[in-house]
Image 1 (tube, one colour):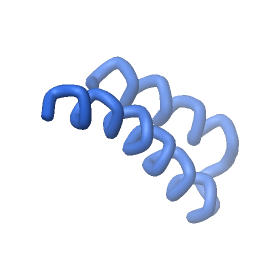
Image 2 (cartoon, rainbow, N blue to C red):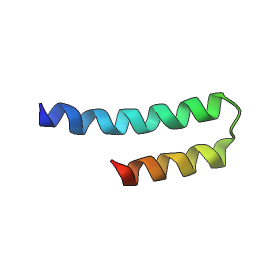
Image 3 (cartoon, rainbow, N blue to C red):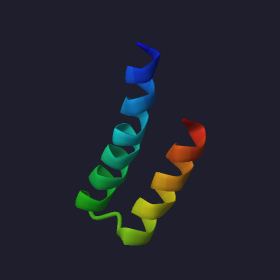
Length: 41
């Protein structure tokens, strides 16, 4: 179960960045969200 959680975190980080990018937040914002979320997980 722990392995599943660890493998799901990078997908969630990519998902947040992709949603931001598709919502018109811009490429720089997507990169910033990616790194902030990566640091939190």
